[in-house]
Length: 423
Picture 1 (spheres, helix red, strand yellow):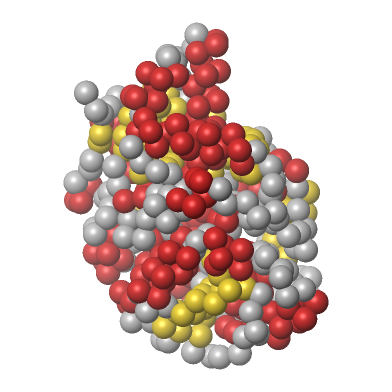
Picture 2: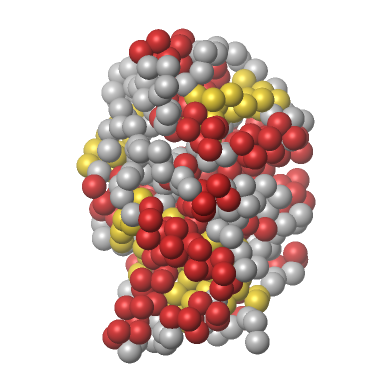
């Protein structure tokens, strides 16, 4: 019998969980790129609206989700939790494997959770236009959808290699009224300077962020919107982990391993942060980030202050980083091609509260193909890293004859990524 747990709309979380309230340490503050001193909230107001700046620094444990956002969440949330019984049978593992399916959202990924929240807070703050970057296009699609819902114009700089590899996502952005261009572009001074040096540059999230911020600071009615890394973005994604906890409780299950793919950190953090208090309380639970060997910020990066963008326009963040000038290879998981990691995720790794592993693209796609055939969902290339991690842990449990309860976040579907499966 297929095991699927669906919560009622009324059971959807009414608040976001803020892990900063429970951590036994303080994060290192972001630094002003000009003075290299802790940045003031006022300095951030050039690119973010006041409510999001307040959330960025808040230490309140629970942040209420506004009613207009809850109404939009109710279109697709709560999302289902499945038991991967077919995968378990194939692996012949004693482990029980569950996955949270965020591909059920209107744009096919978890990104819609924070896009709707950010669009709402910008709208009530008087913002007219949002500008952003996107890698594989999941974030750009989500923000364009949210902009359409709350009446905001959205401009998207899409990493050039993904713009070429994933045309369907740029079509989806345009369907929702968004304007999308490949990055580096000829719309910004920074983009033009890079194209003059190398007209075939594949681009990176760091470059696209620089272009977006350049546009945002030039217009007082425009704000910048980010799909990962920052505290408030991770905060909005905690609806994922909060729902998982409730769904597992209905099954009388206690997870021993929780995994997510990792690029900047939004879906991984949204999945595992509600479990951090359990970890701090000494419970037997492992929290594992799965990233690409082609862009191994957590497993090979340095823990230091670095810029979030290539041009050096953002505040400096204390994080694991490969360096702002790092240009990742042209892997299909465009959403994981980011040089840095969220400060919260980075500090959790530094403190030994989470783990990180890196996988090659070939083995990840083997896992994704297997999952699609067995479980009936084509995963996004990004999500496939979490699938591969779950399979490895299930096989370890088999070898050790150990019962594990493994949960991972299937953060998006791969129906717009089918070319990646045949290349």
